[in-house]
Structure formats: structure tokens, C-alpha cells
Image 1 (cartoon, rainbow, N blue to C red):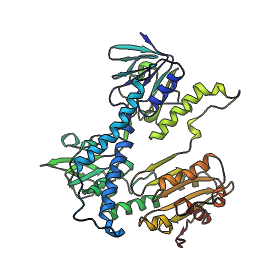
Image 2 (tube, rainbow, N blue to C red):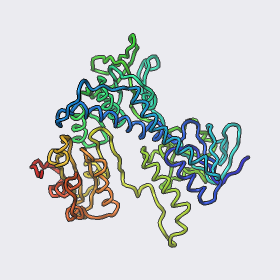
Image 3 (cartoon, helix red, strand yellow):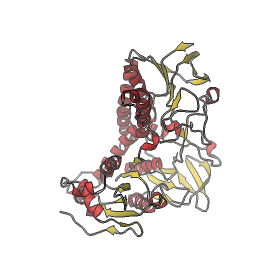
Image 4 (cartoon, rainbow, N blue to C red):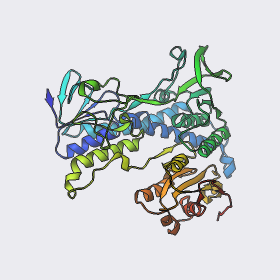
Length: 473
């Protein structure tokens, strides 16, 4: 039995940061990785996909060059081999940086292999048995395969394998109309593919408000993406080099490539959690308390595997919560409260173009909260920067508690919305009233300068009236 001060299983966003943190405190740490160092974000998630999004946007803007008085001789062509090579360079640089940071630390041993529990606080890897008083699980998740008849007999892609494509699909059929499916859908449409998105429910991204879902659909359809809703996929079959997908009540759809983007599952199925006394929920996520402790003493779960957030930023925040509670709390004054998962405000972005920035409550959640809610909507066609760049799709919407004047939530769909959102998110964390924004002087011309105009339109949630009067200058 080899003894360490701590064992970290998985090298996603939380694991390496925690390992370096503990090593800096003089602890001897073993960190295990069975596949690619850096986890989903670095290798198959945020970094490579947003690199592809950037290439797709350049192609899109180049095709619109004449709208801005710029002439490009000849047809705009996309070299998918070059696009893939660039993506590999960017993603690979991040992978190497994380790997070097772990391998060069004398207090950290990076072990490449599949770790699984062999007993309470005992992890086996490559024939070795490791033990530590503290074990941290950061094992991430994987794409799920929907229950579609014949799927095992047809070639298909998921979010990771599609990154290996260096050819342009003639017709990409996507099963799943949520965040991953929409990003890849717009991206490949801009590269030049015909794209069809099949969504099981009545609207795209059902987590969002209906007006947001509808606006996103309009943005995609305006670029030529075909969206089919209420399309429950029943069967798939191979026909020559193509794949045919059949959905209930719809005509069969034939595509050259099939992408499955219908959800993700945690990597807990082969972790041996039963030997360690770690409980899972009905979906396979590790059950954790508000400080991310599992049901096994001395074991914590961070990142996608705990079901408390499915983003890089929530995973890193998990690390911050665990580190603060374990190592910093004693330094604070006696009686200091621990950091908790429930203290954080939900926030994320959808990286279609223009992006969606989301924080706090949706309209449904605000109504169900029992508060008196004020709401306002401001269309991006009235925002100077958006108008100047001829990118006026979308709107900004905010929800406010009528009594306390605190911001409850926001949906910002439009140019630079993923950045502008943080102004509102920071106010929410500061527990400051929305009037702080309306009294501040903002720089012109920006998107953020229109936040006061947005708040000036606040009215009771029912009905929400959109401000269409232009105030461009």
C-alpha cells in the first residue's frame, strides 16, 4: 500500500488546480488520469469547440464582406484540414501546459491509468494500491447514446469524435437541439454543410424562456439551418454512404453524417464506488452535500460527476469551495461560515453567434418564487454597437424583485452578451440593487451602456413589453 497525503482521480478543471494547491501546502499528491490530461474542456470541450466556432465565424464574416464595403475576389472556401490542424494546435497547447504543470511539480505524481476503488480510501491503478486520508474525484462525463433502433449498425459522431473530422459533411444531421447540438449546427452550416437539427421536444433549448428559444431558432434558420421540433427519433439505418434517421410523424431524413448531441452521463460506472461506500443518484451522479463531500468519509466529488453543474466554471468553483473549506476556513475568524454550492448563482453561456449569456432565474422560476417581479426587454437592433456592426439579432431581458430591487435573472442574447452578462452577475453577488447600473456612467459606444435603458423599461412581469424605440447615437 502506497501512502499519499491526497489522491485526485481525474485531471479536469478542478483536479489539477486542487493538486497544485495541496502541493503548494507541502502535501504529497497522486493525481490519476486514464486518458487525456486536462479533461473535457481542454481536449474535447470548450477550447477546441470555441476554436472551431472562431474559424466558422471568420468564414461567415468573409461571406458578408460586401455588406461592409470590402471586396473579396473569388468564392470563400473553407479548408477543413487546416481548420482541424489549427484546433489541434490550440487544444494541444493547453493540454501540454496542464501536463507540464503537474509533471514538473516535485510534490505531485501524475499516474497515467484507470483508477478505481478497491476499498474505503483505497484506489487501485496499474496494479498499484494507493491510499490517502483525502480523495477527490474529478472524473467528468461522456456523451450518452439515445435509445434509437438500429443505432449500433450506423456510423455516428459525438462531441469528441466529430473533432477528428477533417472533411466537410455534405449534410450533417444532429439529434439534439440543446447547447452542444446548436453550437455544432451553426458552426458546420457556416463551414458549408447542409444541417438539420432534430429536437425531441416542441422547442430548442427547453431550459430557456420561450422567447429566447424562439429567437435562437430564428437566428439559426436565417443562416439556413433546418430545425425540426417534436421529432422523437425512433430508428436509424445505413443506406449506401448515408444515414437515414426516422422520427415519429416526420419524413425520413437522409444525411451524410450523424451527430448525437442528446445529453451526457457521468463517468461513475467503472469507478468501483460501491467498494468505497459512495452513493450515486438514479442518473449515476455522485451524491454530495453542500460542501461537495460524498457519503464516504474523506472523499469529495468535483465537476461534472457530481451533478451540481456541467460547466468548466462550475468545476473550477467546486475546487475553490473545497479548498476554502479545507485549508482557509481555519485562518478566518472563529465561526466563519463555510463556502457552499448553493451560494453560487447559476450562470452559463451558449456559444452560437451571437451568444446567449444567462444568469439567475428564468421567467418560470421567478413566477414560481412567489415574488412580485418586474421584467424588461430591450432589442439589440436598438444597440449602437450592434447596429454599427450589422449584427442586430437578439435582445436583452432582465428580471427584478419589485420589493428589494435586486436582480433575479437575465437572458442576454446578442453581440458580446456573454461578456455583458458579468456586469449583472457581479451586482447579484454583491447583493446590490439594479439602480447601481442606472446611476453609473458607461462608456460609449458599447453594449453595456444600454443596460440602464434596459432597466428603465421595467414593468410587472405580466405582460413583458419590449422596448423598440431606437436610441442609437
